[in-house]
Picture 1: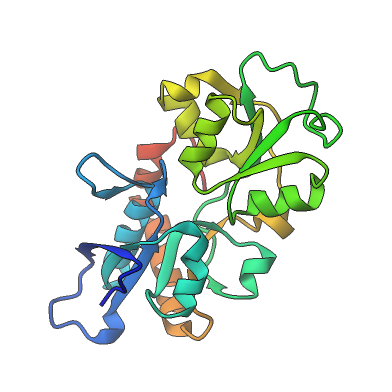
Picture 2: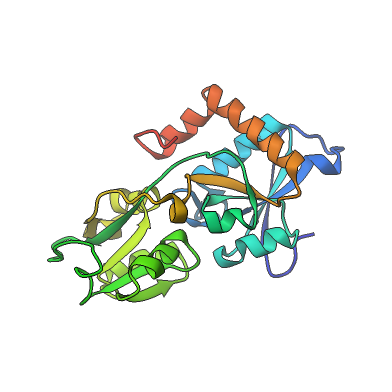
Length: 255
């Protein structure tokens, strides 16, 4: 049973029958507020790259899976509290997170990038360049940790979710944001609101903070589930399933 503090969406996928063993039944946490990777559509149904990958993995691993919507800052604590069994929600495999959870192999990679409103007169993106402006990040993200370390002298506003971050940039609440490049790409390229803004910096890669790409998180003790998910990743990446999902959301490979 999903606890009251969580919202569940009973999307069951995979090959497992109704008589599947408990080892074949898992709950997967998704934030549901990070398009195009995971979001709720107009019918309140989960959609996105993460969701499609999760369904494909459940099919390949013969798992019977149920999605659980979880607010981002509670993702890892709720996993460790056994409220669900895996996180498939664009979680970067940072060193700090690796101390708490076990990750599968990478299932996609994306750098971080600074974004500004078009016409911005910012000369660059160094702490010195940003000393007179306000920088925005999303709470409990790798970008927030990176900014705390390297941009501590810059006035920073922390937003609770990525849509709030983007709105804050568009309406001028902040002057520049640091965000995952693939996540913000959809907003910039495919929404009217995002037409206000553009990339400012080159790609930012830092394995200590942004990890080695996005992975699926499980409890460290769940080695059997970890192995099944890794095997399923190998399966969908060796046939055309992964690439078909990739092409649905991005005009370039994100492996």
